Structures are given as structure tokens and as C-alpha cells.
Figure (cartoon, each protein chain N blue to C red):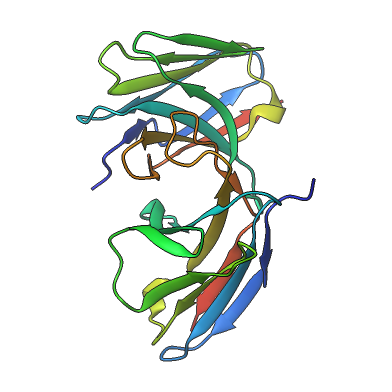
Length: 115
Length: 111
């Protein structure tokens, strides 16, 4: 079974631009979550989608948005990029969301650098 | 402010030594998970502990969940260079499919 894939792996943008990141979950997984990882703040939850609906959202500004398609693939978008948005963006899929054993299967991440 | 505090943040030890990583919170979690992340990869789940006081062993790794389900520890016996990585604890709340991660412990085991 293929793992979680994320594209692109690396991205360089300038301030003010927007960016779209893509995530393909493990086949059969309907829950997709996005996280931002930085050296200072660690791993922080952005949002979670299940069956094309956003169910949970972390404490991030409205510049961060996402969506999920009917095939469970997900995209996240960041508009008006700021230097502080430079981070590793991780996508994770789960087959058992909302349970005690909610194992998150992570992709390798997209490394975004904002200049 | 991290809801889950991990300590230590960094640990550099020699092969064969033992170590313990702590994960503490003032909040109660439904369960707690430990992940390990290697450079260039996403975190990989090591274990989930569910019951207060639970102890789980995975070869040389021993995981414990506090009685009050607010804290956990990871003990590694006879560490090996292959144990090098970033260890993350994550609190699970069933109401809301969201994981709260600790700040991580970066472990380096020197041969």
C-alpha cells in the first residue's frame, strides 16, 4: 500500500505570493490533517478534513485554508505569504479518526521557504 | 505555549547508555502517542498508550502513561545510533480528531 505523498517536496516563494500544497492520503483513508512544523513552535495543527468537510481547525490566520476532494486528496493554500510561514508542512491521513488509537500516517512534508 | 511539555529538548549520549524522555501536561488526554521523526521524513507512530498507569514495551523502548493520563515517559535501554532522531509525544482527544504535539526531544546517540 502506498504511503502518504506530498507535492512538491520543496518550494521557494517570496513575500506576498500565494502557494498551494498537495497531499494524497493512503488509499481508503478519509481523514486528512495538515500540520506546520517549525524549529521554534514545533508541530502545530492546522486543520483536518473528513469526507470533503473541514471538521477541526487550529489557531492559524485565515490566510491558511484547505480543501478535500471526493477522492480524499487534499490541498492547502497559503495566501499573502509572510517570512514566518517558512516551515515544513506535513500532511497526515488516518483510517480511525476520533478514536483512542487515532494513528496518523505522515507524508514526508513540503519544505516551504519564503524570501 | 505548548500544552505538552517535553524534556529534555536535546540529548546527546553514548551508545549503550540509558535515557528517559518526559512528556507532561496539565490537561487530561484520552490517549497519548509517541512518534519518531528522522530528517527529511514525517513522524512515524511508535506506540499509543490508552489506560492510566499503562506500560508498553517495544524491544528496548518502554512507554508509560501516568495514572492521571496527563503525562508519559519514554525510556530507552542501551541506546544505539539507530535510535537517533526527534521523539514527539502527542495527546489525543477523542472529541475532535486533533493531536496536540509536544515540542520534541532531539536525541543523538554516538557510536
